[in-house]
Image 1: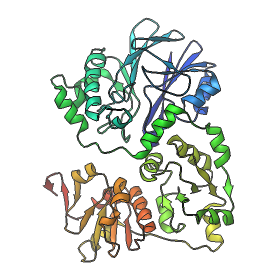
Image 2: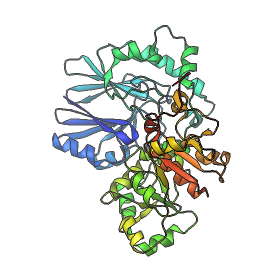
Image 3: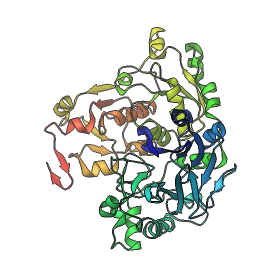
Length: 469
């Protein structure tokens, strides 16, 4: 028996490979079938099933490509309404993988068709639970895409989730290994642990949502507290996962192409084309194509693409680090952004070498920021999440908080005539924010290198919770 978690940090997503006696199954694969196929080949195993815990919103699943290449059967929970052939399992149905059994447990709440899969070992003992987005380490799946169901509210889904956890999950044995679909950093939960594998017993003791004395009303209020509106790409990804999508091989053949400088410049000048710079924030700060949006490959790339690029079909041109165009296009495709026109041949060096105009962002250290902080001309823009800001922030009347995910909607709340010193948590998101504001006509921007992590090491006034430091 082999169980292997295949974790993708960018999406904070865990897919799973299970093998026994030459038969294999994949749970919740991403849209890149090759790693799963190669893993099965290593064991000389045939992929028999592709199991989905639910119809995903935060990424485009790889079930269709994987099934097409391997002949595996796609399995969803009850009433998953898809426009392609799949097996809709019923509650309690059992699938055999070699000497293993996988039992379907219908756990509606995050979505209506959500299921968890109970793994039964060759001796007939319950061994592990693949809980999908029903139960995470430290949290549960938030029901934030209720709008996909007619007449259903997020409160209705939260009530279902409460019942699923109490009647289906909590009665199971404490020793079960718990394999969730996501970890810390995912938009599918709020308080997830940095650990990606745990035990059901630990969650019964520590997870706020599994408190034995918790009423349904308390559960609904706590689970829904602070959740915002899901980004538009969630609904788009749900539709792709339900209706089908273009094979990744076709996307790569169309998009993984170097675009010569002259053609790149011509395409970039078209009104609906976005130039997306995927290099490091340091490289972007030093020199970039005017009007380009920065979202670096080395950060949480795909979620920020989904949060900030409203049109999933927008034509995109890439400025990509050397040797990483296929990775970039694949990661865009994982969240449904398939209309990549290619990448700049020769990269930024070609642009600079041709004498083309470049833009820069002023960047200073936290120590330099400390010296400038009390100046009457210094206005601070904190682009961290609300929860980060509420935990600790700088004190001062000249401080503005505007989370990065809201910046397109609320940029008019800041004055383009002022100079803004921008910081986030560590320096990645502040450069994204600066690139957006520069494209909107803001010219007086100063990035704080190292973000709030560096600012905390200065002597500037900070409020930690309710206590002033």
